[in-house]
Amino acid sequence: MTSNFIDYVKINVRSGHGGSGSSHFRREKHVPKGGPDGGDGGRGGHVVLRGTTDHWTLLHLKYQKHIFAKDGNGGEGQRRSGSQGADAIIEVPLGTIVRDPETGDFLAEVTKQDEEVILLRGGRGGLGNYNFKSSTNQSPHYAQPGEIGEDKWVILELKVLADVGLVGFPNAGKSTLLSVMSAAKPEIADYPFTTIVPNLGVVSYRGFRSFVMADIPGIIEGAAEGKGLGTRFLRHIERNSILLFLVPASAEDINEEYHVLLNELKQYNPALLDKERILAISKMDLVETEEHRERILSQIPEGLSHIFFSSIMEQGLVELKDLLWSTLQNAQPPVQEIEAGNDEA
Image 1 (tube, helix red, strand yellow):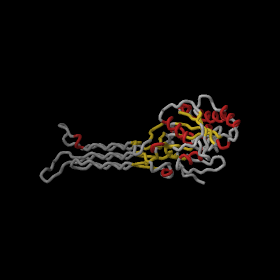
Image 2 (cartoon, rainbow, N blue to C red):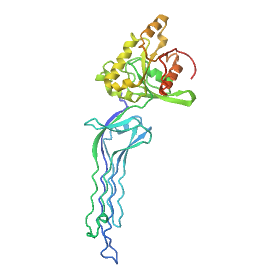
Image 3 (cartoon, rainbow, N blue to C red):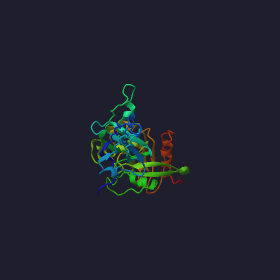
Image 4 (cartoon, one colour):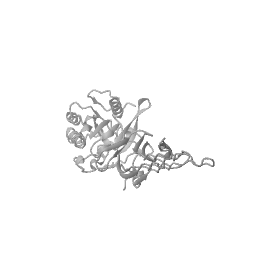
């Protein structure tokens, strides 16, 4: 099945040329030799990025490889300036960045609704001959041509904006957690890579507050080198304020699985380790004995905030919301173990 989630496109953009200035002289019935009155040319159109929540992928730009702004019009007599060329407005989802395809250099980003960033400026309009008259040159026949617009290939890359990013191996329970914590309805099945695109959900919290959670496609060991889904979706984690690591209670070694995930993020971008991290042990409904629970506790890395929960039994979800919210508010919650519970949010 072809996915409609497009987070990478390469397009050619061109700003408009500036209009030429006018070399015109005033001519009236009783003024046979009027002075220069040529107007200025109009500015060429800019290429502008505009953030919008109407799009959540770059799909609408996938087959639109060339986007050109309009040229400015030339000046006219009676010192009338030419009209400006129309800007080319490119609507992009929030979290879009622009890079140079040859150097990879960062050029711009859009992160807010209706935020506008001028990607390429239109050429300036030329000055009309009226601007060049002087005491020594009262009849200038010269007017400036308009400036040439810019032409450039750029890469648009989307990084999903979310407060909380779910990190884990395939089948760790990320999609199920998102489905019970929010109104999102991701595909859920018992096989690897059920999630092949990021899913966003708005999680309601106490007092009509909310935060955004992103289900990032599952990581496998070697993802930073391109294995599995590779680095294609690792970049979406860069935008998250908190990384919520999900490890199922059925894992052979909680500590080892957590550090494999951590290592993949470190290899992709070491700066990701500076983000707040919380370890969530999912699928606690599979834990039937106290011995199993004690073994899980012994495998949790020291000094790491953690919580137990079960999406199926809806246990520990309220406590998980509390922990995420307090961390988002920079409350720096103490290292703790939070038990599964049944309180209402």
